[in-house]
Length: 203
Image (cartoon, rainbow, N blue to C red; front, side, top):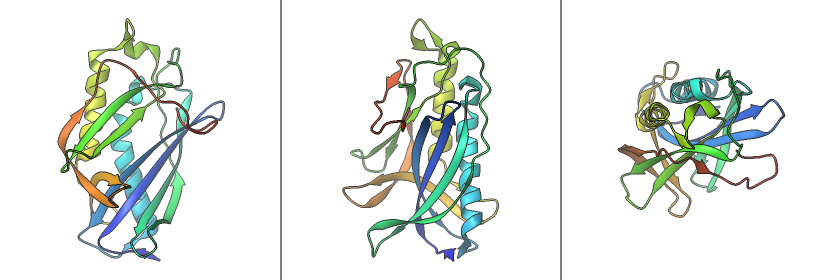
């Protein structure tokens, strides 16, 4: 099967700690333009490239005890009002920071604004080490890395394999609409905390 033009994608990025606990983030984007319909494996591979660009910004501050695990891509089915799996592949992402980890629930928080001021995206960046903080606050260099992550999150990119344009955004469950991201991201020196919603899932 192939992915038609245009399509709305959900990209699930999971990472694993050495003890088996999961760290996960979910991203959305649209794909359109040249080369359609696209091969499913090519779409997944291009999504991995997108994630690699984002997470490379923070890899230097993330613990070497957490690694990329899997990327799963879905496409939105307007008729069925659900998400159909496009495909998956192993995520070869290997953070490099040695030293003690911050508590598992502690993370950097990056916010993304969209064309609708009421719709924002949030990404919790867990796995950071104590070396990224100073007196309990994230260091200025680390916050800069978070903002660079945010810039790669909202910036459209052209897939190397598909040739299609991936335009990031935030999916509204209520409105069933993808709101495109704009050039407005924010983070903070104050560490965020996210509770696990399921046992062994989350940060």
